[in-house]
Amino acid sequence: MAGSGGRGRSGNGRSARWARRLPVFVLLLLLLLWPLTHRYTSIGIDTETQQGESVEGRHYRLRWPGDGSVMVGWIDEHRSAGEGPAVAVDVGALVLQPPRPMTARSTWNDLGFWYEDVVAARGDRSSEAAPQADRVLLLGAPHWLFVALAALVVVARRRRPPADTAWRGGIRATPR
Image 1 (cartoon, rainbow, N blue to C red):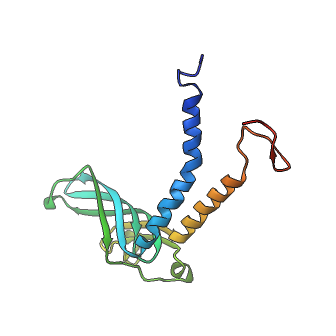
Image 2 (image 1 turned 60 degrees about the vertical axis):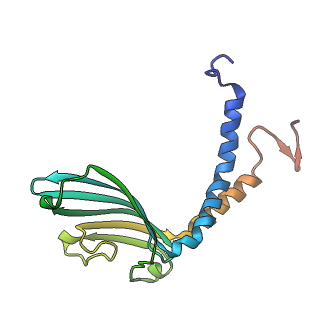
Image 3 (image 1 turned 135 degrees about the horizontal axis):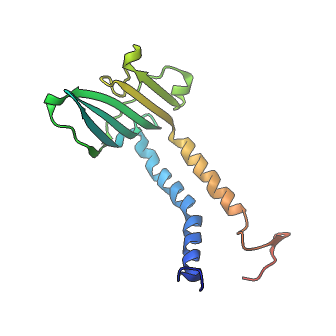
């Protein structure tokens, strides 16, 4: 077809099918992961840069502390350059360890919602997530909330008619 880059309709059809199936796939993945939210798992990327006699590190994390919540954020730490050279980028994970829940300080924390912004230079208390860190910024929500949102997307997409058809009184007005 002219102007289609040689893909034709089949390329668009596969993309549309994938787009329709993606919410279902995400929902199934979240449902499968739900029991694992009661074990500690942390997946992330660590970056380090040498700053004179110290190494500054930032650790980006997706973390399940074991209390049914999911957290995303970063941890800033520094160490002496004598402990080893800086590693530019490192990917790592701890998977299915014993739970390491943080102490709830509010009703919101008891419900699984977290906002942890701790800066050692401000004199803040140390974070249970990383007691030696210079800065900890974590945002968390209960896993069940992500399951519920994914289920709502799946239900909403199933109830909406496809964009290329017209519906009149529950009857398809355009032939298949």
